[in-house]
Image 1 (tube, protein in one colour):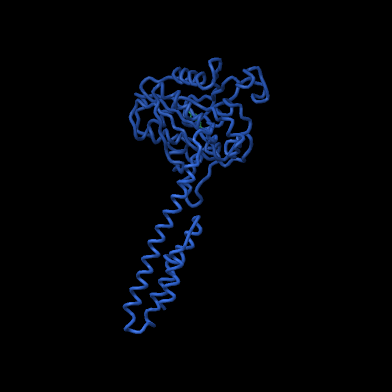
Image 2: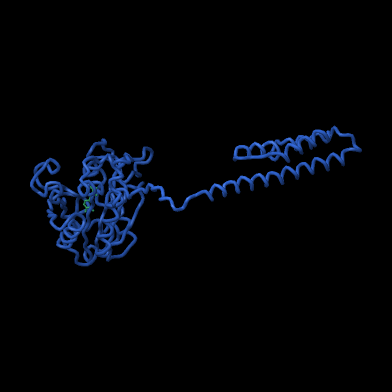
Length: 339
Ligand code: DAH
């Protein structure tokens, strides 16, 4: 048996490694769970009693040698690496790192928030999986009202009370329920609708909701605030117009159009020759909505608006296909390096 121990001892002592794989081979053979030294310990039962003690000591010594050698080998690999590092020429020009860039939707959202923060708005958020109360009922959509059909909703099959939110207006309710006026808040977020995916529509997109509730808030405040916004977001020359519309949660309601950013209002195929493009909806918060949330509608009034962040980004950066935002095509994303 001693011969075997001597052989192994010799093998260990003369072992050399130049890379991690060889180190791993050493570890598996002499240190790992099923190593050859452990096999020797298992032989113990076949050794005559009077030799057991001496055998045990020899195997133990071998085990210590293997462990010391293992540490030595680790060190030798490390210092090899240091020699390599010494070859590094720090005067060479650096290799060019590839930096990522801010996604155009993120940049648009951040700019949106920046503009409104300067006029006293904060940011609120709510869940993307919503209940009927926050997504519809509290927003003055009566049960079975046809307005619910305007938003092709993804319901949770087993519980029609729960849906993927169809708009960020649900966050209005959460804020109105939990805070006292004056309220000035923006709610950005992802929304879901059962729509066929095309260059202009997606089943997942982003909205920015705005809400201002205080004493004496009027439609003039709504107009002026949004006018300020579009000039900041696009440019000084941008015009705005309001078209009467209907939303259950605002009265009166208006669609917001801006002068086409592509043709400057002259008429092109983006604005379908009209010179105007729609960017969202708005209106004076319906008193029923305030009352649903425990806010006295005799004392307080407010305005609200909702816009598609994709739509704003498409106009701002002249992007013609909404699907580009989610395709992760590096050639598309790279163009926004400067944002
Ligand atoms: N929630 C509406 C939608 O998704 C957009 C909207 C319109 C939001 C008018 C508002 C508003 O806050 O006042 O179509």
